Image 1 (cartoon, one colour):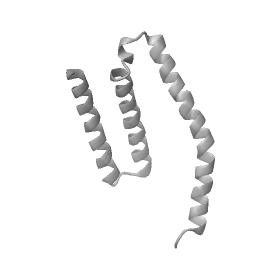
Image 2 (cartoon, one colour):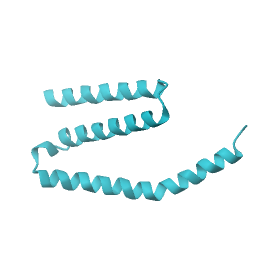
Image 3 (cartoon, rainbow, N blue to C red):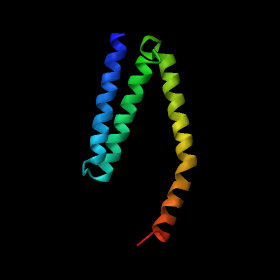
Length: 96
C-alpha cells in the first residue's frame, strides 16, 4: 500500500504544478511543451505502478507504450485538421 500512496502523492504534486503552470504567464510554446512532458510523465507513472508494467518484461512494456503512441498519433491526425478549421472559423466570425 505504501507504493500506491507514494504514487498518488507524486501524481498530486504533478497535478498541482500543472495547475500552477496554467495560471502562470508562461509563453505559449513553453506552456505546451511543459504540459505535454508532465502528462507523459504522469502516464508513465500510472502505467508503471497501477498497470504493474515495471514488473513485466521490457518487450511487453514496449508493446503497450508503442500501442498508446500509435493510437495517440492516429487520433491527432484525425482530429487536428478539424480543430484547425474550427479555430480559423472562430477567428473569422468570432466577437471583435
